[in-house]
Length: 331
Image (tube, rainbow, N blue to C red):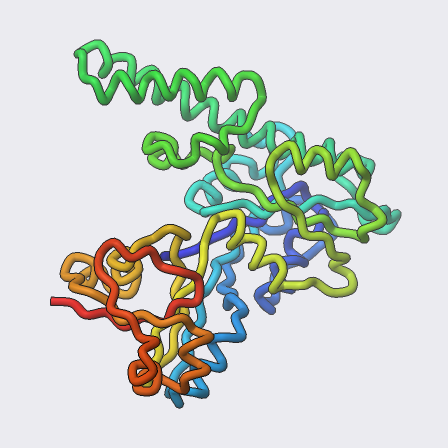
């Protein structure tokens, strides 16, 4: 599956600097709002020590890590949902991402202008979230009006969709995020922004974080990573946290040709995992040879794992575990 994350925030909070650090791409960074007009997109490898060890053991010609696409988008300002700044362009770019990394500036500096004239991460957080909610409200209201007509025909599916839309609309009008609805089919269809999981990147030092800010993040059932972008950024920590909030994990395929990491949701069954490798594998799945990565490495490869009885034949109901090494048998 493709994992994509949008980097969002007000102008001059460190979004483009974070993107540059993550992707090692040179992007246009300047000390004024709306410098980044079109989204910069960078592909970042998911760090995983197991992949390198598997490659060496299998003497693979190629190593293919799991990857994350990061989108660096123009800074959002108050009123973006009504088209202020580059608001509508910004909001359209993050509709399809799986999650949002919300960059908050927590450091003080007279050298870097803040678009709101002062450093206040809680205010900044609420500005961004309000703009996402306003945009979603516009989308939901239009879809609800359409659903009302469909529901009048007595169609049960249309009635259920209408009930869900009305519940969501009520929450949005209260200024609330709708993360708990993100698995609803209509929410996925509309790609609602305020339903996307958020990870907060706090640009500054641990000592700059107020207890009130920690509380606000906890209330959102979100996680945060803190780093001073002027110094260094722990890229693995950020990506691991993104995997965690999206409930993702990795499994591996390995052989002489290549060793590859694949991304799946926790709880995925073997045929679903096979379908990530190739769509036909899910349809024609028979069973899979599976072994835990650690045991595979300790055994010394496929042949040794099989001779030691570590290799298991699993069917369609097998729930994949993080770090499984798998070989698919298909029709």
